[in-house]
Length: 71
Image (cartoon, rainbow, N blue to C red; front, side, top):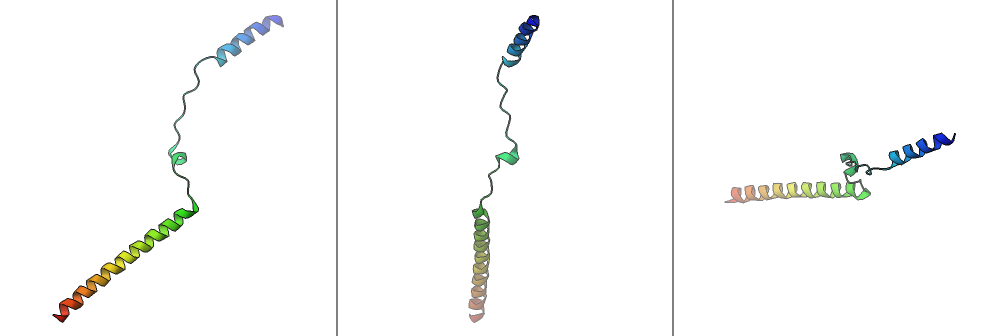
């Protein structure tokens, strides 16, 4: 049994010694920003701004048409 201790200790030292493992790259799914409750609110706010912009453009076009028809 004593003869088995020396090879086991040597094997353990060889197995544990060496360079630490290289860090693995983080997958893109984990690297992505986690969603927050405010993300949906920001999307809704941006959508409302886009709708308002479209409505303003259409109103401006109508004003131009009315002005052109009055002249």
